[in-house]
Image 1 (tube, helix red, strand yellow):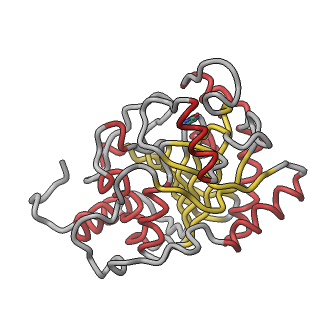
Image 2 (cartoon, protein in one colour):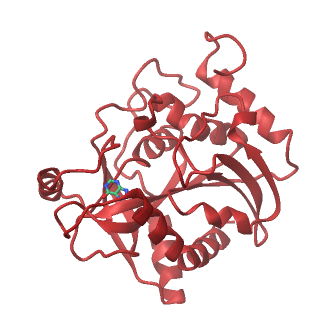
Amino acid sequence: MHEGSAASSLYARAEHAARTIRSRTALDPQIAVVLGSGLGGFADEFDESVRIPYADIPGFAASTVAGHAGSLVIGKVGSVPVVAMQGRVHSYEGYSLEEVTFPIRTFKLLGIGTLLLTNAAGGINVQLSEGTLMIISDHLNLIGVNPLRGPNDERFGPRFPDMTEVYSRVLQETVVEEASALGIEVRRGIYAALSGPSYETPAEIHMLRSFGADAIGMSTVPEAIVARHMGMNVLGISCITNMAAGISDGPINHEEVMEIGNRVRSTFTQLLRRVIGRLK
Ligand code: HPA
């Protein structure tokens, strides 16, 4: 539970969290990165870094999942100050979407204008394979609830925010250009989010394919919606860690998801560094 009364507004609680973070660093990042399953290692390479466990930030929920360290790392990527989440919380852990997206609210009040969301995802489109990086071009919110449900605070954004371009086309192009300069293959596709935690059945994947989904996961979409509500520029990158149920034989497990995340670590890190260098 956050400090202060339960009645204090989401905005006031996010301001409190932002003040706490500001008191721990002299850096003033404009870019935030959320690191998904197996991808947290990126933040270990920051220069001049400060690590703040989520438990020290009022309102930040603790991650209960292996592969999600549960700390905020603020540091420099080259000359660019960045704040990164090493691990996120998900609705399947029992958290509300307000709790899941609370760090994104906090980032906005810290002055962050650009949000890079990463995740591990299952490939539905057969042109994807294990280890492919997929730029998210759009999403399907199939979690069953919208993170903006409930009273709207106009200081964050409008009641009915537009979602025509959740993932910035300019940022997508930047990734394509930088990947091509590095000789890294990237694809573009639609990410569908279900609540999890069970992986999907082959019948569900079949349905999602007919819906136009290229990849499937259990995160990212609530954060992207909340970020767009507040007018942030959003980029999403999925690391395809397995082919979805029924697309390839064999069961899916979290260990495999994390192992592939580790395997793409150096490619992923190089790409993120270059993209961040372009954003300053
Ligand atoms: N389904 C849902 N979430 C996932 C998957 C998957 O196959 N792989 C990694 N995250």
